[in-house]
Amino acid sequence: MKMILNISDFETWKIVAKVCVKYGADVDRTQDDFFNDLLSKYDGELTAEALTEWLDTEIPKHFRVFDERPIWIQDPQWLYHDGRPMIFVGQILLDNPPASLLHDGTKFYLFIPQGRWSDADIRVVSQQF
Image (cartoon, rainbow, N blue to C red; front, side, top):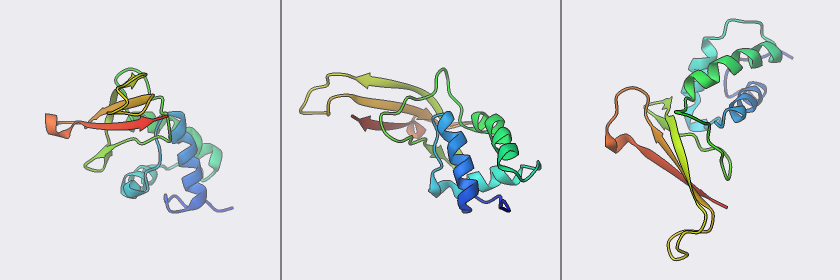
């Protein structure tokens, strides 16, 4: 099997997705440019094992966290700003929120952009059980 280093290639996508999940990230198909740019920097052997090993060192450099990686309730929803993964700051679990406002077991995930940013650039993802 010949590997094509493009996120649109299903075999490449599977490898990238498998590594991303280990770090609490996902392969957001609206961010193909980011992943194709990352893949363009790979100059190793065109094998699944070699690419996986390389991605294991590269993905955490781009999907950064302040302390711990997110523990998603549902599928990962890592956010991007200007085509780059945002930095995960932390998560808040509301075990028993007011029923009129939120569903039981709501979790908020806070992200800030890499580089310079303002308060308006802060983003939050919410997920519910």
